[in-house]
Image (cartoon, rainbow, N blue to C red):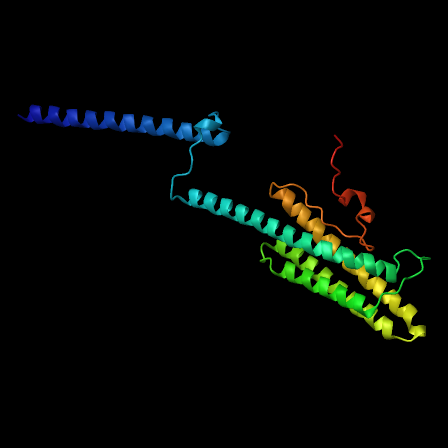
Length: 235
């Protein structure tokens, strides 16, 4: 009886030992496999890559990233549309202002009237209004939007300065004209900064270039070559 119990206990011990050996072997194999997998890139093809499980953190992160990218592209398009409208209005004002306060030295001015200034103000207010309807987005988009709005408002200040010039004595008009020219040039530089930012945003979001630049005289041909709209090839 005792010999039978001893043999039974011995058999159980051997069985447990064998099971432990198998478990240890499996653990070692898994550890080596995981270490090999973490040591370098997987050799599995792109088609074998598993998609994030629905509802997982990875899947939610991908959805959020895709949504933000889509919203960013839509806001870029809205800003470009508003900037294009504002650019057209501001270019017209700049062209007329260039006749009254020439961009190039040596050119004789053709004075504008108070009614001309009123028309400039009307166009510029509409330009600001169009830009202000665009929602704020990322910091980069906000920089472009604020640069456009600031440029239009600065050109409004330029128009106000010219109206003041019209009512000033002759001996003050030269200095006032210089101030008007400085404000105009500053407005154009600020607009150019916003236009460059918008162009970069459009390209980075996968779109095409957006060239909405201005020149001090409002002439599209005066825009620097690298900022001009590409010409359509002749058929």
